[in-house]
Length: 276
Image (tube, rainbow, N blue to C red; front, side, top):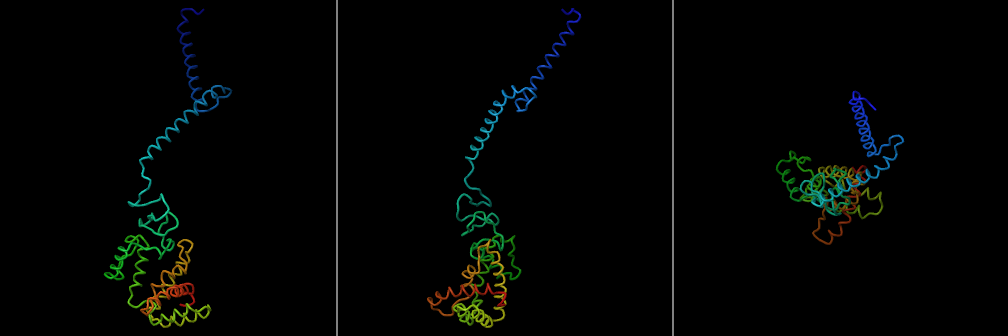
């Protein structure tokens, strides 16, 4: 039995011990709730672990429901440059140049110069192609056709094809046309090259030099065939009627020559290093 003199000290000591036990108990509960083991005290972990997992699952469920509710107000397509479609396979907008791209196989293809899929086959916007044409008519070599002015490479390629189509005398002239067609009709490869070499001699110097430069460029395009899907045959289909036209006005004869025109350009591309 403690004396009266020692009672306040004994009471203070008991309060300190009780406070210490209560603080230790709260600390143990907090650590147990976080899933941490305290030596041999496995019972508290066993009690609090299911509670922790339940709280975590509820929190995850709340986040998921909030996300789904928010997504209900998001449109089903994403817009970049005011237009871009990624939710269906088909024509779509190019992420790089923001122009509408036709005939592409993969979604999200970016314009990338020689690696641009369908190069020379895909058409650019006709209005912008006309702008390029007028810029050259007005400013000549000073015309700005940089990427800052025309980001879509198909506008530049379309302008080039338009230039060759509008020439009053085709790049492969009417006088040389029969010789080129003759080379396409020949089955022997060596003889084809000989006839093509003779046909090139019939072209005026300016025409021959332009054709040489163009074929060297198209040969570089075919080196990136895996990316742009433009082989020498595909380029022949595009440039055959563009570079050469039948001198006769007979529509049927001109129609029959289309396949030979393709073969001529295809052979010029494949044998560019030999013929020029």
